[in-house]
Amino acid sequence: MLYLIYQWWNEANQAGASWAETFSFLNIFKYLTVRAALACLIAFGLSLWLGPRVIRRLISLKVGQPIRTAEEVHKLHELHGAKAGTPTMGGVMILGTITIAVFLCGQIWNPFVGVTMFVMLGLGALGFMDDYAKVKKKNSEGVSSRFKLGWQAVVSACAALFLYISTGVEGEALADQQAKVEYKASTDRVKQMEGIDIPRENAFWVKDKEGKAEHMPISSLGIPLVKRPILDLSYLAIPFFMIIIIGASNAVNLTDGLDGLATGCTITTCIAYAVIAYLAGNIISFSHIHIPFNPQLSELAVFIMAMAGASFGFLWFNCHPAKVFMGDTGSLAIGGSIGTMAICTKQEILLVIIGFVFVMEAVSVILQVGSFKLRGKRIFAMAPIHHHFELRGWHESQVIIRFWIISIICAFIGLSLLKLV
Image (cartoon, rainbow, N blue to C red; front, side, top):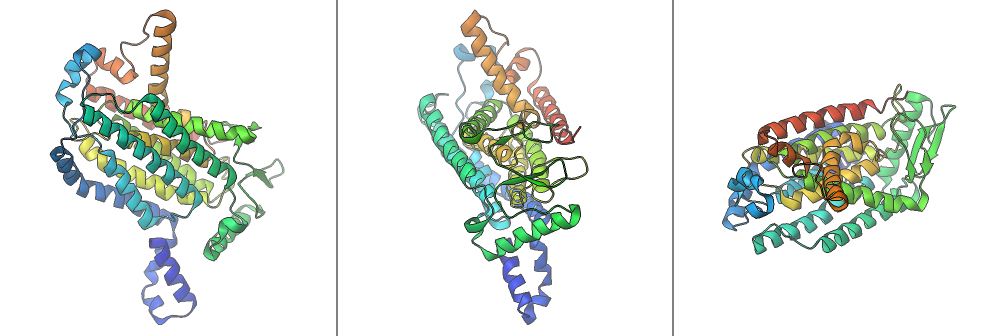
C-alpha cells in the first residue's frame, strides 16, 4: 500500500500537480530500507497490541497445549508438566501480523514475496489443522504423519515449480510499466557503479572471470566461498527445493520445544537473510562479496523483516515462562518460509550454517532414531537435542539463551562466508 501511495504521488509529481510538492515526503516510501524497517516495526507493534487479546481469546476457547504423559517422556514431564494448558496456536498472531505488514509496506505482486507468502500461509494452514487436532483429542497426536508430509509436499512442489518456471523479470513477468522502469533503474545503477551491463533476460546474474555479467539459472547450486556455481541441477532443482522447504519446516517445528527457543533463532536467521536479500537486489558484487544478482530480490527483505518484527513481538509473550506457544501453526509456516528465503536468494547451502540450531535439532532426531533402530541404543538422553541438555542438568533458560548465542554466532559466520577466497 505504501509503495502504491508513492507511485500515485510520483505520477502526480511528474504531471506537475500542485499538491505533490506539499506531500513530497511521500517520496520516502520508494526506499526499500524505509519500507523494510516500517514492516518490522508494524509487525512488532501489532504483535504487542494483539498479543493480550489473542491470548485471552485462546484461553476462552480452551486451546491449551497438551503435554506428553510421564510414561511417554519420564523425567521431562516433571520439568514441563506445569506448562499443560498454556494457550497454543499463537502462530496465528505471527502469520497475521506478517501478512498485514507486508500488504502495507511491500509489493505483494513481487514473485519472490508472493511465493514466500504462499508457503507461509499454506504451511500455516497445515499447522493450524495439526494444532486443532491436538487440542480436540487432548493429546500430543495431531494429524497423521502421512497427511502432514503430503500437504508439505504439495505446497513445496507448487513453490518449487513456480520458482523454476517464473524466475524471469523480463517480458510478461513485468506487466506493470512501473516495474519495468524500476528494473531498468536497478540494472542501470549496477552498470554505473560497477561498469557491468545486465542484459534484460531471466533469472540471476553473477560476474564471470572477465568481470562481465553471466547468466545463472535458479537451478544452479553454489557453495560458500566458491564464486561460480558447482553445477546446474536442471529439473532436479524442483525436488531439491522441495526437500529444503520441507526440511526447514520440520526443523523449526522440532526446535519449538522450549519457551522462545525457535522464536529467537528465527529472528537471527531472518536478519541474516534480510541482509542477503537486500544486497542481492542491489549489487552484482561488492568488494570481495559474491551474491547472485536479481533486481527484484531486494523486495523480499520487506517480508523477511516483517517476520523478524512479528517474531520479536511474539517473543514478548513467548519468553520463559511462556504465556502462549506458537504451535505448529507458527513453526511449520516459519520453517517453510525460511527455506523459501534461502532458495530465492540462492543461498541454500548457507542455510545449514545460518540456521545451524534448526539443523542441529533435526539432525539430533535423525541420529537418535537411526541409532535406536540400527543398534538398539540412544545417542542422546532425549531428542531433539535441547531436551538432552535439560536432562543433563541445564535449566531451560540456560538452554534457550545458549542456543540463541549459537544462532547469533552462526548468522555472523554465514554472512562472513559470502566473502570470496
